Image (cartoon, rainbow, N blue to C red):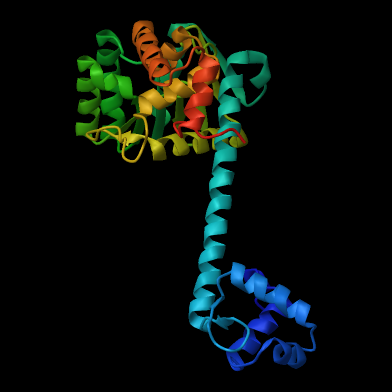
Length: 331
């Protein structure tokens, strides 16, 4: 009856018997249930692991059963925790799969077919985005990596963005934390927020991406230069995976108006990300590009981290970081 909550038949029978006969000893329980004393001990071990029995100084078997209301509450809480952990694992898997899809979009032929449309050059990208913007009805979700944006790009985006918001389209955008240090970009982001757009920032972003009405996604062909070309993806499965990637990043990002949180963290988010990228073997230039900062800033942060970790190499820095609890151990 309680097998769905992690209790096998014999262990449930022992638990029920202990509730009915709290004074019964090991031999009495074994006799009542037609089990060996060793079987009863094994059931008691399982009940103890599930917190359905607690140590007792009474003369019986050293344990007493917790009341059924509390017991069922514990079993349900345990099952809910397992479901939540499985859900988190599923979301992480979706995000990892989506990130792979996003990265593969730079390979052109890998995503060719009826569910994709390739655009070459900045004018073709600009015109297609304008067409898509005119037809979007409900929501636009955007990853905007690359750090600070030019004043010209910011000014050019204002009219189409405000037009979308006036039409009631929900706009959610994730920028890099580094834009908080660039006044023109910060002003633009604040302006978007004032119109009703939702804006958050994070330390690093996997790829530049725009998702429209959860049915079309636009990604660059070249992550180093988004103006070279882009691909418009229409496939339901691919776009759903990219939506999952966006939602996972959005959930962890910091809302505009808040400072990136470092509560209970051994390192600020930016330093932790630099350390993670160092451990992966990325160069200072690659790290700078991922974080939207200058190579000089990336070198300064990396050098400071290696000094604090007393590391002579980037690999050694990663090892020391795991030992210090600054990074999770690989699994």
